[in-house]
Image (cartoon, rainbow, N blue to C red):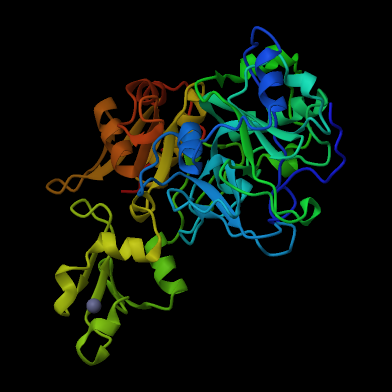
Length: 464
Ligand SMILES: [Zn+2]
């Protein structure tokens, strides 16, 4: 075993945010042979493009997906300060003369619509990476375990990756990370599990310690179809999964849009931000002028330079409505037909899902109670519904008799309200992305038939 004592990895310390060395594995393989042979053969690297690498981990990611992987490229020595500027993927990753990194999680946009490598924005975790194999961690630790990839990141030093069968929530990722630490499979100095820069294959390792020319990363083993469930990793490494010991620092709820963070909701419920993300982005760019009422806003056209005499007037942003679910943009100048709302969103870097300005509920297996609670919070937020006699009711005034009527909410009406109130997402195994769905009937029934309600206000009496 080559015990190179050089500075091993990578990425973790540099971006000033949440670093995390992350770790794990899965299925037991038949023997040691595969890995031993591959990493000992110098000439034997496997060509995998950076895009193929990312796609194998995250599946197809559409340009307008709300959840995106983050990549980062750095010329030269990544240890120099202020060099970490993550970008959302898809993007151009074809420059093998740079250091290239990707995070194991998909991220939601921050409040201003941009993507940042922050724990609180990590949504689901698609893989885990064991770092410093062959140096800090003996190769024997993974010798009889199937990895999804084994990347030689500098001579004799490897990162082993494990793609999850299904993405895991951030809370589980932290528990797994703690268990890995406990089993001596990870550097104690690192603690995160969601923001963790993993090296990509078509890249150099530009650390000054490795001299010039910088060594290239070499893919030594590439088996993206080898995928692990957390249970596989627990079994194969004999891990003790418990409550994470540092939950206060680590498992921030993934209420990505940040507005009202509800402790306990992780990766399931994202309350909508107080302010529409499009308006926030317009303000941040100095394009916002004033509200015109009725959801219309006077703004500076981003393409004002194309107006005759550069006249800055006659451009309007419309908030989302039933008719225009992602809102609208109208410029009265001659290019008005060219620049529609999708162009404005593209310019502002606001995802279409964020432009809808609704809360997001993600249907995750095993999270029935938290999803139902999130749905109850949404129904309560309308201030139109109350709990009464063990059910949900609405209060109306009959326009003819002027009598106040208490009307029980039916189950179909509850489903309809919840479909209007929030965006429902579900993970698709086929496309490996989150897709829109209707509120699942199981969750609707659970809310409808709940024994008690935690959030809905009781209807105490009616002021006549
Ligand atoms: Zn214009």
